[in-house]
Image (cartoon, rainbow, N blue to C red):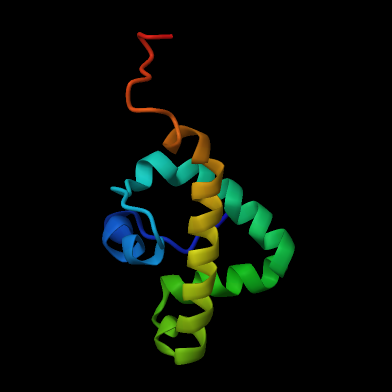
Length: 101
């Protein structure tokens, strides 16, 4: 499964795309969920279109305005879906730790 994200620049590129969340984005913490979201999204927009956008992101083709806009929308949707999947972890009170359970 491909995903339209780069580990090296993930936090810097994606933080502005997550509206209303002040998070330190670490690719390694979200990687498995991003792949799960990729599978789900590829079923919604169809696998061929999804892979075209992922390939365009990974190549120089994303320079076109049409591809850049579509990739931006795809990334935003995937990031928000990913954060939705992690909402329970964000909503735990700061005082809750593994030791206190």
